[in-house]
Image (tube, rainbow over all chains, first blue to last red; front, side, top):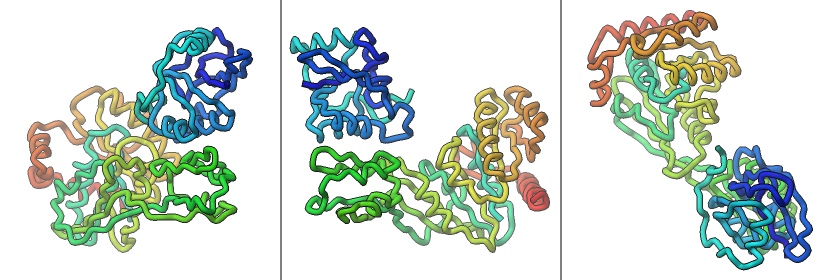
Length: 121
Length: 277
């Protein structure tokens, strides 16, 4: 299954990026094989609607679960509509997060945990 | 002739200058409060409101029976207001700028536009001054379409005084664009100067003639004066700090009623501006 962890760098050793829409990289990881693609975020400097656009990107890549620090309302709604599970409040290294996820240590978010434009600064 | 009052930094005295300036001029003057997120000129002008009109923007509505989720709408949307997920297009109305691209390009003709109310415009008058202001709906992020709706009332046979919003972003551009002159109100503090410089850059970019009014001119430091001198920005007026001005403002009273001498000063300022453009 494909999951995505937002990341500050392009390796599994990188730290989780606390922003969803404006993260540095989307690390798209196959939980079975641990093969991954580090996708530079094309929306990082977007003026607005970045959460929607990044959510769309997750859907287009067939991601089933997103693990990140913070998710705003528009991103959350987009991911929900795409049937993608959201796990927010995540921090640490990407590979640790993947490991914790596989051990079932995270609960699924039921709502956004930050407001619009939170990731602007 | 259109004269806009802007500032960069908020709270420098835009509305004080704009209202007192407009009421100091005689005959054929209209006042447009374009600070639609927080209009407050009416507190000082006290207009008798004669009519009220809703302002809306067109937003897309998708007919799911025609939509085949091709994704063209989300590709053409410059504001990321549409996502297409699985077989469904999802519209984020609050991100929509009402440009109409999605409905224009939809190959299935599945999108039509519906009206979304973003606020309203009120018109009135007092003391011989025509008054218009826009009031943005609470929670509505899209100020420029409402500002443009207020500016549709610009009457070219009159002197139009525009009270602009603070800042230097889209709403400010929408408010001061097409003006003949911009008065930038600033205060001689580090914050005031910082934002004043940004506002100067905006006005220069729009190639509108402008000058500065320094409010509370005897407080703060000399850096604003020095900057104006260096940049050859005319200082149109200095308003020294006076507690009576602050307390009159807090009661919704006018500077020109408190100190009638300001009426002549503003009138002279208008003549100077008129002669300079």
